[in-house]
Length: 385
Image 1 (tube, rainbow, N blue to C red):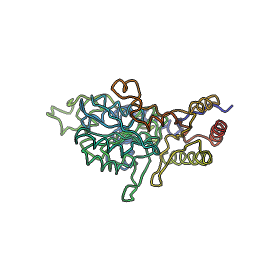
Image 2: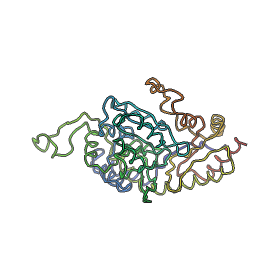
Image 3: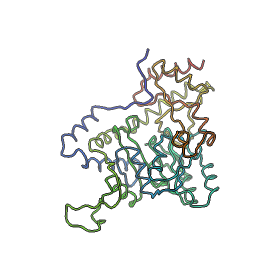
Image 4: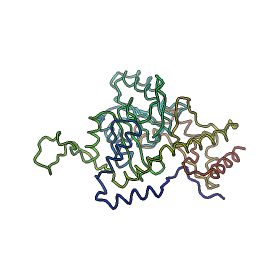
């Protein structure tokens, strides 16, 4: 039998290890120069003016919600097809999470349903929206921005699956996830199975100087980072806590790893494209398998390769019996017990609920070998035949 094949896996090279070792031998393990270096390199890569590195993607979401002023009782619209952190960040601030169903093809927040939700309430009822670039498919943020502007909403784009993903805007210009052209803030994750790995880690990108300043304060206990913003200045040792913040700082050695990994992002994306193409070709003649939809104007980052199949449980059990550890992404957030206790119920969002009964993420990571992928394909086809 083939060795265990996970759905995702990190790739650490000798260059990555050496980058970490150099930092460990330096004068800084945290709050040193590698953090700014990583931020600047990441901002440049996605085309944003600013990037703020934090301890993980959840921290990025949390202080993004704080920076945009989420308060108790505020209503924020979130997609139900995501990891729970995308919704929880609103709850951390005391806000109410309102779920919008997904598009059955892209699996992204359905913008038509979003507009219907907004039109059904007085303007100002909803404060913001948090879409997710699910599996690596970027939302058309220009269309979302137009809707947000009509109803006075801010946008946090959860692009944790989608560094390097692009789409063509209405003018035919290529736009990259995280560029900040259409969104207020965009968040990324550097969990080991993501495109860029730092163990744990996250990044927020924006083009707004005031927001980036707030984020830097919130990630470090609410302490002012700019001497010009101090209420008084008693000397070079002096600092002020001006907001209630957190210790959401990332370390220098994590950022050294992130910098090294960032250099391979384009290579990772190319590998993922080839793997997706091979899956698509292998399953093209089998209508029992719904493969990912990708519009011609989209470059999919393929954090995940998600298929839909009628007997999902049967297939996942069969694959696991053959050492293929496919995964489910995700159980809908609105049906988690915590969110059901807040009033959500089965039947509220039929598209995502149908999807969640049929979805399966096949192995997708840059170092997946052809032999391993052939084995996965063989076992999937064995099952459906």
